[in-house]
Length: 292
Image 1 (cartoon, rainbow, N blue to C red):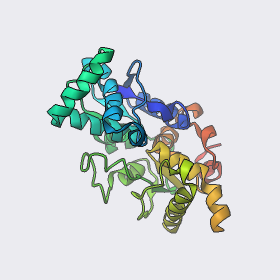
Image 2 (image 1 turned 90 degrees about the vertical axis):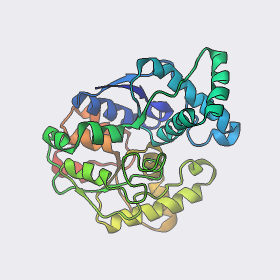
Image 3 (image 1 turned 135 degrees about the horizontal axis):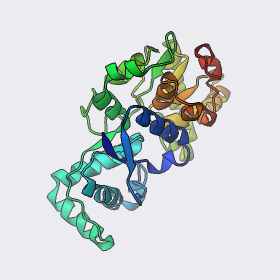
Image 4 (image 1 turned 45 degrees about the vertical axis):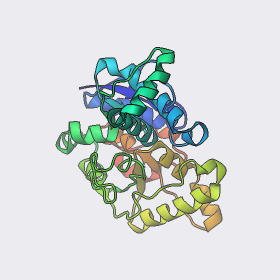
């Protein structure tokens, strides 16, 4: 199966572990991710606050216009990119006035988008196009007994509600964790926001948000948190010690992308695990499974 792949800015910067493990897992599952040539930043969740919704969505539409001639589903591994791409795509499909105005702007660069594509997340592709049964058959390293909190985040299942899971009570991510042989722990705050980009302008907001998340995951007995979202992974990984300092806690919770856990369960080469990019070391939690 072939897809037009939109890596987005984070995968080439703070979320390189996401890119490396996603590419490796896709190859292992015979999913061909063909990178969209000359793609540009989608504006994610903050650009619209500076340049406005229309300009941000035209920026995003350029990527879709470049991808459209191939006719393949557009896939991204970033929840924020998915939010941006999927909502822009939906507007091109449903709002003829916006479509005409946006294409007038795109024409200045020689582009046009007709709204014919489908935008998807890599998580959804793995669940829907590959399926749990095939994933389980691919497992070569047992993760039995590993207690994992699946942190879905606030964008993955809410950008386009009911696209592939319930926006308030998602279950598919836990089923994916269990298809790898691990135990999905109780995590009532699995869809709560991590504070997103407030990490820069309002660190206290992020510290308060992720303190609640860590407390919820720890109460469920989690040893590891996994997420599909680069912003969630970065906030929980980078600000964990800040939470401990300010809240008097002692969390030491590794934060992995779900694709990193899949690369380990598939027993792919260690480069595909990309664990060197994790700030909170996962090695102690994963040592019983031969991860060193």
